Amino acid sequence: MAESTGILITGGKVVNEESSAFNDVYIENGKIVDVGQNLHVPEGVRVIDATGKLVIPGGIDTHTHMELAFMGTKAVDDFYIGTKAALAGGTTMIMDFVIPHKGKSLLEAYDRWRETADSKVCCDYSLHVAVTWWNDQVKNEMEILAKERGVNSFKMFMAYKDMLMLQDSELYAAFSRCKTIGAIAQVHAENGDLIAEGAKKMLSMGITGPEGHELCRPEEVEAEATQRAITIASAVNCPLYVVHVMSKSAAKVVSDARRNGRVVFGEPIAAGLGTDGTHYWHKDWAHAASFVMGPPLRPDPSTPGYLMDLLANDDLSVTGTDNCTFSVCQKALGKDDFTKIPNGVNGVEDRMSVIWEKGVHSGKMDENRFVAVTSSNAAKIFNFYPQKGRIAKNSDADVVIWDPKLSRRISAKTHHQAVDYNIFEGMECHGVTVITICRGKVVYEDGNLKATPGWGRFIHREPFSDFVYQRVNQRDQVGQPTAVIRQPYEGKVISL
Ligand code: URQ
Ligand code: ZN
Ligand code: ZN
Image 1 (cartoon, protein in one colour):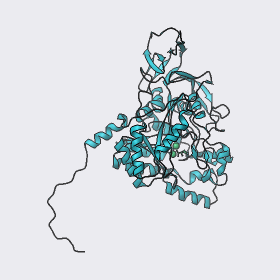
Image 2 (cartoon, rainbow, N blue to C red; image 1 turned 180 degrees about the horizontal axis):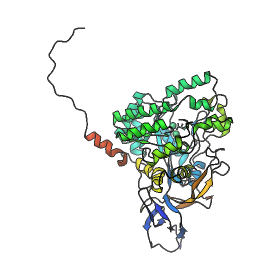
Image 3 (cartoon, rainbow, N blue to C red; image 1 turned 180 degrees about the vertical axis):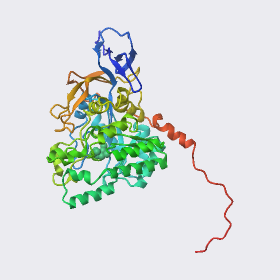
Image 4 (tube, protein in one colour; image 1 turned 45 degrees about the vertical axis):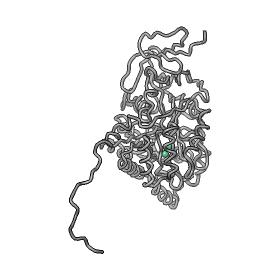
């Protein structure tokens, strides 16, 4: 008889975003077939004893840039190594970004990213698409991407002047297009003009080190753009997703907007939740440079705790990593000028443990909120819930056996990523992946990766996610401004 591909997970506590229950989980052919007690399973299935452990939905990393060509070089974690590392850390899906250069076709860029990634990914993945320029071709290609290529999220950069940045009028047009095609608008929210001026000022003052990277774009440069994006999205009644919220100021802007009823989601990342920008002042240049990313990590050491508090109470909604890794020799392109340090840090392998340690082990959030912010909310916002983000019948068998009592010390010496440093170096984290199951296949156990390049599939996402568009649609029905009916003015008019 052919060996069964079935897996029965027994004795564990199944943790979903709304509740936890001691249940067994039966997996077959890449799907969760049943969840409950005393399950009837065929002969020969593999039994995994999860007693004393949690059984959680595989993590979904909403924000990565595997092998991104950027600032003159290429990120070292590619779609193979980066997704292997993700699996080792309990993440079973990544969402990466197609970033076409200004003037280039979004569709052709999408096809290139698919060609590169499809044969290399060890876990399921999807792609956001960046809108880095604007004309009717871009407008048309966005619709094709939404209707035929499974893309329901577009990222607009408000920074990287002359390279990726859009002006406000272009943001307005791009947000309007997102609304029409049922996509969510994502923004990199920093004021690119202020960054350009700030960088010139720092360099003219002889500040060429990584500290200049933060000094030239302080929190208010991020907060101002965050507010501006929210204001433009609100004018268009378009749902907004602020990627990599890195500061208390920007987080407050998102939180206030949500309390004022705006449809906006904030995405803190592992780096901002686990460490801070004091490292830019480290005496060792390589150490300081390894933390350079945009928006910068903030030197206010209370930032990680503050962001985690807002994430715990749903002022911030979902987590990614912005994993875009450059080894020290690549960061050294900017050894004499911080504006030339390739921007980006690691996170894809350590996100789940960092958030468990700083979020759950600290008492700020419970296990259910942990599942919400590391998996379920991503699936809801981007419209593939409960296919993913849930341990339930008919969901994909992306399942992690999680040990909340075990702890591990994070280090570049032991991580599975390609980059030669780790911004969480030495951090002791409770919350460790024991086994990772990716679409029904055990791909990580006992510290050993059994990942296969090409095992991952591209996840198509339909537009008009209910989770995002219900309120938007409701507002289109009601509350539209109307003209006042009045008699025409018949008095004198000045002649000019
Ligand atoms: O800005 C981004 O999200 C990309 C280019 C990654 N780099 C970074 O510093 N965040
Ligand atoms: Zn960005
Ligand atoms: Zn990014």
